[in-house]
Amino acid sequence: MSLPGFGRVERDAGVRGAIQRAAQRVGVDFTYLLNQAKSESGLNPNAQAQSSSAGGLFQFIDQSWLGAVKMYGAKHGLGWAADAISRRSDGSWKVDGSVREQVMALKNHPEASSLMAAEFASDNAQGLQASLGRQPRSADLYFAHFLGLEGATRFLRTADARPDANAAALFPREARANRSIFYDNGGNARSLSQVYALMAKKIDDTGAAIPSTRPATPDAVGPDADMRLAYARQVFEGDGKAAPDTAEMLAMMGSTQRMNLLRPNPANAMLAYMMLASDGDATIGDAGSNLDA
Image (cartoon, rainbow, N blue to C red):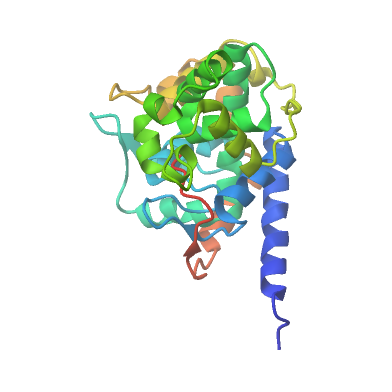
Protein backbone atom coordinates (compact mmCIF):
# COMPACT_ATOMS: atom_id res chain seq x y z
CA MET A 1 0.00 0.00 0.00
CA SER A 2 1.42 3.37 -1.05
CA LEU A 3 1.13 6.54 0.98
CA PRO A 4 -0.91 9.39 -0.55
CA GLY A 5 1.37 11.76 -2.42
CA PHE A 6 4.44 9.55 -2.00
CA GLY A 7 4.60 8.78 -5.71
CA ARG A 8 4.80 12.46 -6.58
CA VAL A 9 7.47 13.10 -3.94
CA GLU A 10 9.52 10.24 -5.35
CA ARG A 11 8.98 11.51 -8.91
CA ASP A 12 9.97 15.06 -8.01
CA ALA A 13 13.12 13.83 -6.29
CA GLY A 14 14.10 11.93 -9.42
CA VAL A 15 13.38 14.96 -11.59
CA ARG A 16 15.42 17.25 -9.35
CA GLY A 17 18.30 14.81 -9.57
CA ALA A 18 18.12 14.79 -13.37
CA ILE A 19 18.07 18.60 -13.48
CA GLN A 20 20.99 18.85 -11.06
CA ARG A 21 23.08 16.40 -13.08
CA ALA A 22 22.34 18.30 -16.29
CA ALA A 23 23.20 21.64 -14.69
CA GLN A 24 26.52 20.29 -13.43
CA ARG A 25 27.36 18.55 -16.69
CA VAL A 26 26.64 21.55 -18.91
CA GLY A 27 27.70 24.23 -16.44
CA VAL A 28 24.51 26.24 -15.85
CA ASP A 29 22.85 27.49 -12.68
CA PHE A 30 20.85 24.69 -11.06
CA THR A 31 18.40 27.06 -9.33
CA TYR A 32 17.46 28.73 -12.62
CA LEU A 33 16.99 25.41 -14.41
CA LEU A 34 14.90 24.01 -11.54
CA ASN A 35 12.70 27.12 -11.38
CA GLN A 36 12.19 26.99 -15.14
CA ALA A 37 10.98 23.40 -14.92
CA LYS A 38 8.70 24.29 -11.99
CA SER A 39 7.18 27.17 -13.96
CA GLU A 40 6.82 25.25 -17.21
CA SER A 41 5.54 21.88 -16.01
CA GLY A 42 5.31 21.75 -12.23
CA LEU A 43 8.18 19.20 -12.42
CA ASN A 44 5.93 16.79 -14.31
CA PRO A 45 8.03 15.16 -17.07
CA ASN A 46 4.85 14.09 -18.87
CA ALA A 47 3.15 17.50 -18.83
CA GLN A 48 1.43 18.34 -22.11
CA ALA A 49 0.06 21.72 -23.15
CA GLN A 50 -3.58 21.81 -24.22
CA SER A 51 -3.19 24.14 -27.20
CA SER A 52 0.23 23.31 -28.67
CA SER A 53 2.80 20.55 -29.03
CA ALA A 54 4.66 21.83 -25.95
CA GLY A 55 5.48 18.95 -23.64
CA GLY A 56 7.87 17.59 -21.05
CA LEU A 57 9.62 19.23 -18.12
CA PHE A 58 10.62 22.30 -20.12
CA GLN A 59 7.67 22.40 -22.53
CA PHE A 60 9.63 22.17 -25.75
CA ILE A 61 7.37 22.40 -28.77
CA ASP A 62 8.10 19.66 -31.31
CA GLN A 63 10.14 21.84 -33.68
CA SER A 64 12.27 23.29 -30.88
CA TRP A 65 12.83 19.80 -29.49
CA LEU A 66 14.04 18.47 -32.82
CA GLY A 67 16.29 21.51 -33.18
CA ALA A 68 17.73 20.98 -29.71
CA VAL A 69 18.45 17.30 -30.28
CA LYS A 70 20.02 18.09 -33.66
CA MET A 71 22.17 20.79 -32.07
CA TYR A 72 23.21 19.16 -28.81
CA GLY A 73 22.22 15.49 -28.93
CA ALA A 74 25.49 13.98 -30.16
CA LYS A 75 27.37 15.65 -27.32
CA HIS A 76 25.31 13.63 -24.84
CA GLY A 77 25.30 10.23 -26.49
CA LEU A 78 22.25 10.85 -28.67
CA GLY A 79 24.03 10.88 -32.00
CA TRP A 80 21.58 8.29 -33.34
CA ALA A 81 18.74 10.77 -32.73
CA ALA A 82 20.62 13.79 -34.08
CA ASP A 83 21.51 11.89 -37.24
CA ALA A 84 17.83 11.06 -37.83
CA ILE A 85 16.88 14.76 -37.87
CA SER A 86 17.20 16.94 -40.96
CA ARG A 87 15.90 20.24 -42.23
CA ARG A 88 13.27 20.76 -44.90
CA SER A 89 13.64 23.41 -47.59
CA ASP A 90 11.29 25.71 -45.65
CA GLY A 91 13.57 25.61 -42.61
CA SER A 92 11.42 23.31 -40.47
CA TRP A 93 12.75 20.12 -38.91
CA LYS A 94 11.80 16.56 -39.77
CA VAL A 95 12.81 13.23 -38.24
CA ASP A 96 13.18 9.83 -39.87
CA GLY A 97 9.90 8.00 -39.46
CA SER A 98 11.57 4.79 -38.29
CA VAL A 99 12.77 6.45 -35.07
CA ARG A 100 10.34 9.35 -34.75
CA GLU A 101 8.50 7.81 -31.81
CA GLN A 102 11.72 7.24 -29.87
CA VAL A 103 13.09 10.73 -30.60
CA MET A 104 9.89 12.48 -29.55
CA ALA A 105 9.57 10.25 -26.46
CA LEU A 106 12.88 11.67 -25.22
CA LYS A 107 11.08 14.96 -24.66
CA ASN A 108 9.33 13.31 -21.70
CA HIS A 109 12.52 11.81 -20.30
CA PRO A 110 13.89 13.92 -17.41
CA GLU A 111 17.56 13.28 -18.23
CA ALA A 112 17.26 14.10 -21.93
CA SER A 113 14.99 17.13 -21.57
CA SER A 114 17.12 18.56 -18.74
CA LEU A 115 20.29 18.22 -20.80
CA MET A 116 18.74 19.89 -23.84
CA ALA A 117 17.29 22.71 -21.72
CA ALA A 118 20.63 23.21 -19.96
CA GLU A 119 22.52 23.45 -23.25
CA PHE A 120 19.93 25.85 -24.65
CA ALA A 121 20.09 28.00 -21.50
CA SER A 122 23.89 28.03 -21.58
CA ASP A 123 24.06 29.25 -25.16
CA ASN A 124 21.30 31.79 -24.48
CA ALA A 125 23.19 33.12 -21.45
CA GLN A 126 26.29 33.63 -23.56
CA GLY A 127 24.29 35.27 -26.31
CA LEU A 128 22.50 37.64 -23.92
CA GLN A 129 25.73 38.58 -22.19
CA ALA A 130 27.26 39.46 -25.55
CA SER A 131 24.25 41.46 -26.77
CA LEU A 132 23.36 43.21 -23.50
CA GLY A 133 26.87 43.75 -22.21
CA ARG A 134 26.09 42.31 -18.79
CA GLN A 135 25.50 39.01 -17.04
CA PRO A 136 21.80 38.11 -17.51
CA ARG A 137 19.27 37.70 -14.70
CA SER A 138 17.00 34.68 -14.45
CA ALA A 139 14.14 36.64 -16.02
CA ASP A 140 16.36 37.69 -18.93
CA LEU A 141 17.23 34.07 -19.60
CA TYR A 142 13.59 33.04 -19.31
CA PHE A 143 12.72 35.57 -22.02
CA ALA A 144 15.27 33.89 -24.29
CA HIS A 145 13.42 30.60 -23.70
CA PHE A 146 10.12 32.36 -24.36
CA LEU A 147 10.96 34.64 -27.31
CA GLY A 148 14.18 33.20 -28.66
CA LEU A 149 17.54 34.92 -28.29
CA GLU A 150 16.91 37.67 -30.83
CA GLY A 151 13.37 38.32 -29.58
CA ALA A 152 14.57 38.45 -25.98
CA THR A 153 17.33 40.89 -26.87
CA ARG A 154 14.85 43.15 -28.64
CA PHE A 155 12.37 42.93 -25.76
CA LEU A 156 14.95 43.65 -23.06
CA ARG A 157 16.56 46.55 -24.90
CA THR A 158 13.20 48.12 -25.68
CA ALA A 159 12.00 47.59 -22.09
CA ASP A 160 15.06 49.47 -20.83
CA ALA A 161 14.38 52.38 -23.17
CA ARG A 162 10.56 52.39 -23.16
CA PRO A 163 9.28 50.42 -20.15
CA ASP A 164 5.70 51.69 -20.57
CA ALA A 165 5.38 50.62 -24.22
CA ASN A 166 2.55 48.22 -25.16
CA ALA A 167 4.12 44.74 -25.17
CA ALA A 168 1.38 43.15 -27.29
CA ALA A 169 1.80 45.79 -29.99
CA LEU A 170 5.50 44.99 -30.25
CA PHE A 171 5.06 41.20 -30.04
CA PRO A 172 1.64 40.51 -31.62
CA ARG A 173 2.25 36.86 -32.52
CA GLU A 174 3.46 35.97 -29.05
CA ALA A 175 0.61 37.95 -27.49
CA ARG A 176 -1.99 36.00 -29.48
CA ALA A 177 -0.51 32.71 -28.29
CA ASN A 178 -0.05 33.80 -24.67
CA ARG A 179 -2.84 36.20 -23.74
CA SER A 180 -2.40 35.66 -20.00
CA ILE A 181 1.14 37.01 -20.27
CA PHE A 182 0.44 40.05 -22.42
CA TYR A 183 -3.03 40.97 -21.08
CA ASP A 184 -4.43 41.23 -17.57
CA ASN A 185 -7.68 39.64 -16.40
CA GLY A 186 -9.63 42.66 -17.61
CA GLY A 187 -8.26 42.35 -21.15
CA ASN A 188 -5.96 45.35 -20.82
CA ALA A 189 -2.63 45.11 -22.60
CA ARG A 190 0.37 44.98 -20.29
CA SER A 191 3.40 47.21 -20.71
CA LEU A 192 6.87 45.83 -21.31
CA SER A 193 7.80 46.43 -17.68
CA GLN A 194 4.64 44.67 -16.49
CA VAL A 195 5.32 41.64 -18.69
CA TYR A 196 8.89 41.54 -17.42
CA ALA A 197 7.72 41.67 -13.80
CA LEU A 198 5.25 38.84 -14.44
CA MET A 199 7.88 36.64 -16.04
CA ALA A 200 10.35 37.43 -13.26
CA LYS A 201 7.77 36.28 -10.73
CA LYS A 202 7.14 33.05 -12.65
CA ILE A 203 10.84 32.20 -12.57
CA ASP A 204 11.45 33.41 -8.98
CA ASP A 205 13.93 36.04 -10.16
CA THR A 206 15.69 37.64 -7.17
CA GLY A 207 17.16 40.51 -9.19
CA ALA A 208 20.68 39.10 -9.09
CA ALA A 209 22.66 38.07 -12.14
CA ILE A 210 22.88 34.35 -12.79
CA PRO A 211 26.32 33.06 -11.82
CA SER A 212 28.38 31.83 -14.73
CA THR A 213 29.13 28.18 -14.05
CA ARG A 214 30.06 26.80 -17.48
CA PRO A 215 33.28 24.77 -17.17
CA ALA A 216 36.34 26.44 -18.66
CA THR A 217 36.57 24.03 -21.57
CA PRO A 218 38.08 24.97 -24.96
CA ASP A 219 34.63 25.11 -26.59
CA ALA A 220 33.21 27.56 -24.03
CA VAL A 221 34.86 30.62 -25.57
CA GLY A 222 36.35 31.76 -28.84
CA PRO A 223 35.41 31.00 -32.47
CA ASP A 224 33.75 27.68 -31.66
CA ALA A 225 31.37 29.37 -29.22
CA ASP A 226 30.54 32.09 -31.75
CA MET A 227 29.83 29.46 -34.41
CA ARG A 228 27.71 27.44 -31.99
CA LEU A 229 25.60 30.49 -31.12
CA ALA A 230 25.10 31.30 -34.79
CA TYR A 231 24.04 27.72 -35.41
CA ALA A 232 21.69 27.82 -32.43
CA ARG A 233 19.96 30.90 -33.82
CA GLN A 234 19.29 28.98 -37.04
CA VAL A 235 18.09 25.96 -35.07
CA PHE A 236 15.57 27.83 -32.96
CA GLU A 237 14.83 30.99 -34.96
CA GLY A 238 15.30 29.84 -38.55
CA ASP A 239 13.78 32.05 -41.24
CA GLY A 240 13.59 29.34 -43.86
CA LYS A 241 17.25 29.48 -44.84
CA ALA A 242 19.04 26.19 -44.48
CA ALA A 243 21.21 25.92 -41.40
CA PRO A 244 24.53 24.13 -41.70
CA ASP A 245 24.14 20.43 -41.08
CA THR A 246 25.89 18.69 -38.21
CA ALA A 247 28.84 17.59 -40.35
CA GLU A 248 29.39 21.15 -41.57
CA MET A 249 29.12 22.49 -38.03
CA LEU A 250 31.69 20.01 -36.75
CA ALA A 251 34.03 20.70 -39.65
CA MET A 252 34.17 24.31 -38.48
CA MET A 253 35.29 23.21 -35.00
CA GLY A 254 38.63 21.95 -33.77
CA SER A 255 39.56 18.29 -34.03
CA THR A 256 39.28 17.69 -30.26
CA GLN A 257 35.75 19.08 -30.12
CA ARG A 258 34.82 17.05 -33.19
CA MET A 259 36.14 13.86 -31.62
CA ASN A 260 34.18 14.46 -28.41
CA LEU A 261 30.91 14.94 -30.26
CA LEU A 262 31.18 12.12 -32.73
CA ARG A 263 32.60 9.60 -30.25
CA PRO A 264 30.70 10.01 -26.98
CA ASN A 265 32.27 8.25 -24.02
CA PRO A 266 30.71 5.07 -22.58
CA ALA A 267 28.83 7.05 -19.93
CA ASN A 268 27.10 9.06 -22.66
CA ALA A 269 26.27 5.95 -24.63
CA MET A 270 24.78 4.41 -21.50
CA LEU A 271 22.52 7.47 -21.13
CA ALA A 272 21.11 6.85 -24.60
CA TYR A 273 20.52 3.20 -23.77
CA MET A 274 18.76 4.10 -20.51
CA MET A 275 16.44 6.45 -22.37
CA LEU A 276 15.49 3.83 -24.94
CA ALA A 277 14.92 1.30 -22.17
CA SER A 278 12.43 3.54 -20.32
CA ASP A 279 8.88 2.16 -20.38
CA GLY A 280 7.38 5.62 -20.97
CA ASP A 281 3.87 4.56 -19.94
CA ALA A 282 3.23 7.29 -17.35
CA THR A 283 -0.03 9.19 -17.59
CA ILE A 284 0.07 12.41 -19.59
CA GLY A 285 -0.69 15.39 -17.37
CA ASP A 286 -1.66 19.01 -17.85
CA ALA A 287 1.20 21.39 -18.47
CA GLY A 288 2.00 24.06 -15.96
CA SER A 289 2.58 26.63 -18.68
CA ASN A 290 1.56 27.31 -22.26
CA LEU A 291 4.66 29.21 -23.36
CA ASP A 292 5.97 27.96 -26.69
CA ALA A 293 9.72 27.89 -26.78
